[in-house]
Image (cartoon, helix red, strand yellow):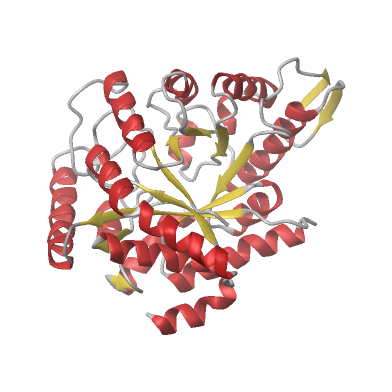
Length: 378
């Protein structure tokens, strides 16, 4: 299966190592970053969601009208709008983007962050709500006849939409999480299941958990798997590792001079994914071919934070190890958002695409059962 690459549609030039120099929604920078992705071989970009950041839906609509090929992954939290409204909003955006839209449903792993926008459900309740929400959105997208819905979280009657997506039967649904509740909900409903970059053995276990949940839900297909990394590349291994250590020092320096994010828990993150990253960092700094955990340790496991360090060839080989496990969507975001998007697209993506095409031609096996072979070959 061809591999796909997901970048970031950040609305300003800040990162864990760089302070923002302009407004929160810097249109010029947003467009420049998106065009850098489009011009350097990326498939889509993510518009993330935060309770205090620019609203991603209108920002994505604006960008979709400015770029020609780049696809949009739109993050959406179910607590911020009713599912019937959201389904119409997504269908409208699918028209604006000429069918280039995928929706990433975020359940939310931080109680404080959720409560900032009035969401007081527990995490397991939120996963239950997200699953119901996705089911409703899918039905609104595809049903031409009015229908009623009486569920645990939503009730409405005689509903039918008059705006349907360009994509048939519907846009893709993306989902993430590392808890049993997440596997159950995403395994049942997701077209794409998103993981943060972990060692190969841990990733294989997560993939099997997702696919087992899909089987338990009665699916005959299974979600595609996406894995996210922070690439740190340079022309030589020595230069790449020097850059990696400079990056960690820059993360620490920036965190020391700014206030912790509101809702940041001193005792550690609430969400299972971040807890997993912290636990992996405690096990060691380097795993497999190029995975490096100090970036995650320095951020306290916030978000996608484990790095892949090395030359473009080394990082490409590491990504191919994940591809062989069953990962066919690679999410990558550097610490210099613009420069790293260009460098990764110019030097890493072509290597991975060429090798994936070769594997496909040769009919190579893929899946978690290949883990022992992969590790033995490193």
